[in-house]
Length: 305
Image 1 (tube, rainbow, N blue to C red):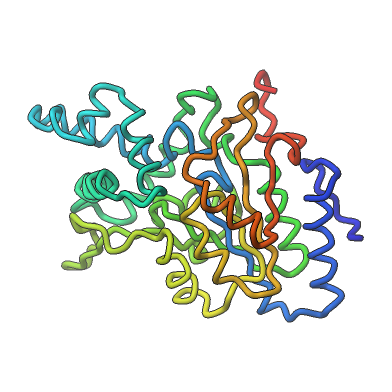
Image 2 (image 1 turned 180 degrees about the vertical axis):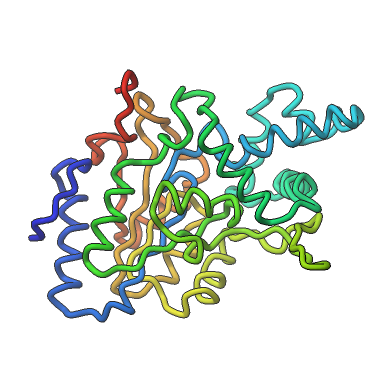
């Protein structure tokens, strides 16, 4: 077995499966260029409840838009923000994973309109500032400390064994890039995510008022192949939207499905992961229990743990 520990992971079958897999990759002499590990972000590398972190960033923009145009306050998703109704927003995501995109289309359209006309670098700077200034509304932790310590530890473990790590998420690529740099040490060129439309005019690259693509479900394998040109040897996810990515991975890949079952330290829910959990059981994928497999969930913060 490898001598590199995963101290945030509890001893047991799940940790053993990860270490044994990496040892086998080393023993088999798998070329470094084939050691590709791809992870979802929301719910896999950091917390995603009561809504995704990016949506907390967008809420402030929608609130300002509703202040400027009061008529928006009667329309979703602005209505939900004005009324502090996180339930509607969370339900839109849950409906998406159940196959109903009626509210998700409304939500994504509003996300695009909020950033329309903004220069790309200004957006990145604003996203970075938000991540370092904001606090999670339920966990009462700085957002930068809402990453999952065991998963960051896993990234380093894999990299020490020659893996190249990527993020492929439904979250906006340009919002995730500052987090990739600062929180995960994954450079921005290895962030694969949804994209707002882009327009170039007179030396400036700005966002269009519509989405270019939404990197979830069947779109994930397409975007992974477009960016990397290889099937992953290890994949990690947590939702129904990650199933196509799991299916696309190499036949000999390790597939890690994060299950949120720890209401005391994070959140407990299977909504949006029902199909993924069934697929994991049917195909022998490794299900990671936050409650049972992680000795700690978040990075240690004075006064918090």
